[in-house]
Length: 507
Ligand code: TRP
Image (cartoon, rainbow, N blue to C red; front, side):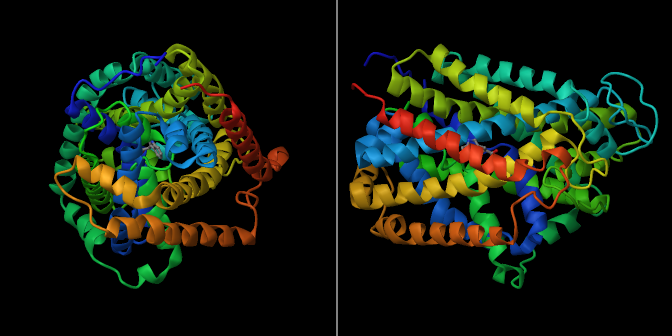
């Protein structure tokens, strides 16, 4: 091999990195708002079905093909299922880059809120214009603060900080990633457990838990709950974008991937539930109403609650700071994996250095992050979309998130199930596993998963018929964005994968 791929120094390093990838904005920001939107107790039955029927087996596939071939996603698919599968691999890498761009934009905002904890964000009764470290003027509420933050150029600076940290952690590959996750991953568990204890010991905190856990069998007849649970599971477990395959490719070939998949999924879903409990207990204690967009819950509803946690200002500030610090570190251990997927795929195929691959990924993605933080105000009402950046982010998220992960999941299960043969992968996994996968694994990969995913994808498409996503919001002179963004994403990601699939490749 001409390029050194690097390896994890220990199994623990891999587990920390993979669970750090899985645990991120998805577990804190998106899970809680999904669980709320889909009615708390109605959400977790579909959620667990999604975990066992879809999440776990696909993670075994993604981990399995990584160790089996020792290659990143597109080349692993090529080796096992041919060139057409490689094309889908590159398409997922292209889509991962779109997701990276806006994922880091959100982290930039979280960073801004973290900085704000030292300034006017957690000063009860006062808040607004966003000037970090400075004394605020009037109008309370974290919401005003958040939208004021979005309306400044500060987030552009913050996303460069986040990008810098990401590249620093990625500069040596597995070995430098391992160093970072050894600190960050335990730390985020400690903070989250602290938050949940604080939430539950407040008067009324337990009502939130009841809301989250009381089953609601009426809600589950609604197709959108199922769609929400399946996409949430894919995103939360970092599946469908080649991430887990890249991480697994740095493991020795005899790694027990059945066990690893169970461990990583278990860690991810426990964190998600603990985060859910923490957030719902705060919601109920302070009778907050999380109406509005996905980001609202973590970005201003919960901060509003934190504002009332204590009458001692520095304690409130410390809590607020730690809450956003938690989001930032949980997010960074995920964004590094989102970047590592594309970078390792390019290193493998183009035989370029890590530095060059990181540059090729970082430049367009960082431009995308800046676009998502453009503070040009297009909707003064702030009802749906405050700034141009927020609209770009929202529309991109709608298309890339709703479709690419699940489409890739569909194609990879078909490719592995039918072209390679599910049984071959099952045998390979069983060879090194304490816990043998039965024939049911083949049935899941060949039939159940493709049918479930196809149903979910088609039903999402069917839902689009009522009009183009985002077109109902008045975007002023940017009214072309709702059709431009999906076309742009498809055109760029498809030509990217066409180009890279056909690039000659010497082993
Ligand atoms: N799983 C992460 C989260 O919950 C995000 C993430 C990282 C991801 N890598 C991914 C999502 C790959 C999909 C695919 O925040």
